[in-house]
Length: 190
Image (tube, rainbow, N blue to C red; front, side, top):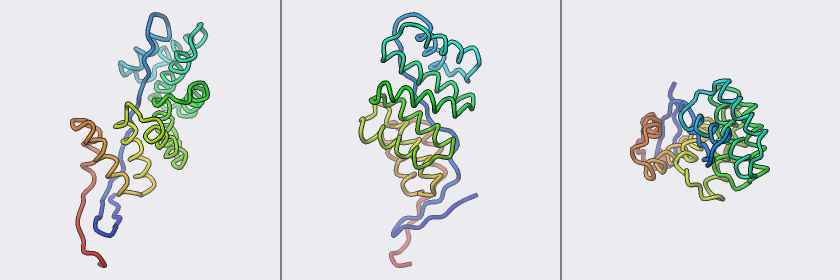
């Protein structure tokens, strides 16, 4: 299904954009928290064993930073498994502990999008992009484009994808997503 939105000079056509970008947080050293990070980084699909590993790590003595990171990493695994409410809870805990964790805002926004809480998702992603100066701005822009698309703000979605590709030109998910849009000029007043 294609949707057409016209602005003064640009018309954007979009099909729904598929999956969100995710960001894990590095936990250094040895132990279950580091193993949880490795499971997340390696692309684990959210197996029960990987989630249990992260849960077990939260029972260990961890620094505040590593505890918050482990909540984010477990949230990523839960999100991959489709357990969005559990992922949302983990991100909220991480953000209470370390409100400056950009990765938590990126993933929180993605989870809120899956839960169809688009206004809250937009707020979380704006925080990651605008307030925190995200190291992972392309992921945040990509996820925000998904939110804009869901809200039928196709022009904003297109420009977020375009900006993500300026920062990471060879990024396949953003290339695929922007390929679903077409930009046409029209005369003012038409």
